[in-house]
Image 1 (cartoon, rainbow, N blue to C red):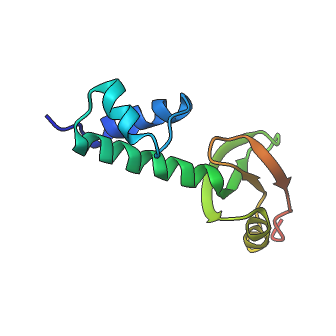
Image 2 (cartoon, rainbow, N blue to C red):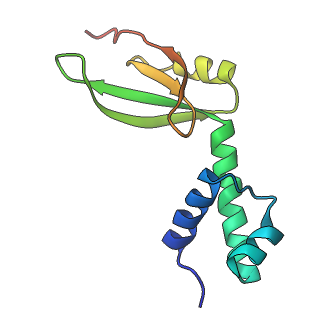
Length: 115
C-alpha cells in the first residue's frame, strides 16, 4: 500500500529534523522497510526541504496597534541574502528575512509610506 501525500510530508519532515537527507535513500529503505516508490517520494520531499532550508523567505508581518505581530506570511523567496534584501525593498510593509525553519538570520524593517 502506497503512502499518502500527507504521510510522506510528515515522515519526511520528521526524518529531516532527525538529520536524514535526500542522499540517504538506500539507508532509508533498509531502516524503514520502504518500497522503492515510497523511498523515491520521501527523498524527493527531503530534497524540497533541503532546497527551502538553503533559501531565504521574505516574510510580511502584520502588527496590531500595540506593535505585536499577529500574522506572518511568506510573500517571496530568494536564493541568497543579497537577492532577498533586494526583493524586500520592493515591499512597503514591515518585513523580516528568515530561513525556512524560522531561525532569523537578518531582519530589516521599513515603515509603510502610506501611514
